[in-house]
Amino acid sequence: MRSYTAGHMKIQPLAALCVALATALGGCSQFSVPMGSNNIDSPTLLTGSISSASDVAYADINEDDRSVIAQNLDTIGPDLAAGKPTDALSLTWLNSISGNSGTLSSINASTFSETGCLGFKTTANTIVGIKLYSGTACRDVTQKFAVTSLNVADA
Image 1 (tube, helix red, strand yellow):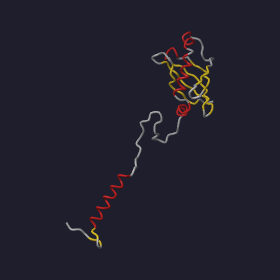
Image 2: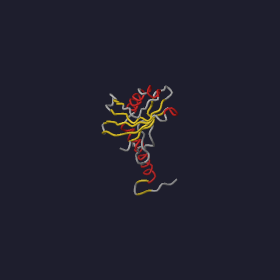
Image 3: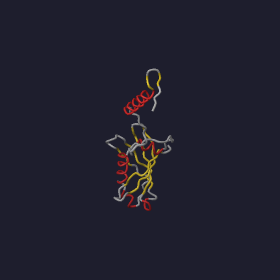
Image 4: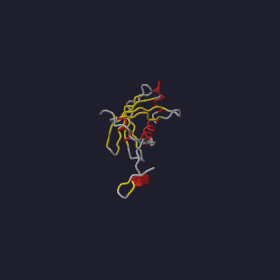
């Protein structure tokens, strides 16, 4: 095989040296492209969609706050069993860990006997301010309430 020369240097050894140098330096670079996230709590947003009212509610009222709300709804279990009206009830809640607090009101138990779920409204005093939310809580297999949906309510 014949090599071509450029002046005093041969072209083939120069090309081989450039390829070897590029390969060695390319292995040292730390360039990566994120493909997604396994973090379920705060997943990587892969689209540029407009945030919804439930996204805002999830960011403001975390899982601990939702469990405190559900525990307060559990206290009206005897009233629900007795068939007493609950729409005039007002319950306050406080999460001592997050510092968030609020008042549960407009508790709608009209479909409770068929579905085990009730609707409610709650205010939430969080670090971002005071907002009104509407939500749904349903009983689980242990007959305890769990907040199943929560959205920013129109004031």
